[in-house]
Image (cartoon, rainbow, N blue to C red; front, side, top):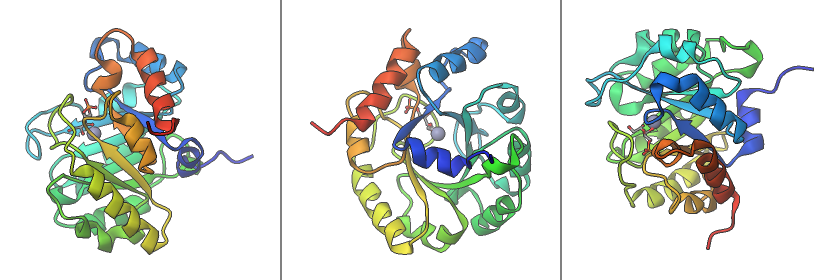
Length: 240
Ligand code: DX5
Ligand code: ZN
């Protein structure tokens, strides 16, 4: 039996969460990731920041590779000109790899290049190519790319840090991007990232988002497993 593709896995569990590790205890990252895996999490989110595209610097391919986990690795590249760098992230085990439309001169070329690469964990999983948009970037930017991607990631905060406040205009952007995807007829996942906590996660489920990135709501405090379970259940609950 062939293994399901990452896209099939995500479609099966959607809506679900992708847990950002920025605020995890990085000295105990292996056990932090195991904890969320046991809680039912299917995807772990790595925020890669280069200190140029956004103010912080975080992690690169060696750390992504070092995390041994059955979870899908969701790599969010907030780096300048990723064209020559995406190969290293794929080799490190990215299952989902997201570039920023604002960070590259040739986003279409980067996506084409990714389309030729194989998943380093298991070829049958395939690669999910994502394009992220900052809150201030018009949605139309993504329209010419719709035939070359499998995921759109709308940022609900400006890239840079975990723990920021959700920008409310994201709700309208999610509605608009959903219409755009439906009109295109392509099988594209819609994801949202930033500021999603216990008090607004149910709204995300109701709005038809497939993947919700959440970091501090899971790792702040001492109960990542309970937090992750709460977030997954709330995504599936009917809105209040
Ligand atoms: C923002 C990052 C997000 C962020 C999520 O630049 O892309 O992934 O760390 O963290 P929370 O859920 O804390 O906003
Ligand atoms: Zn992110």
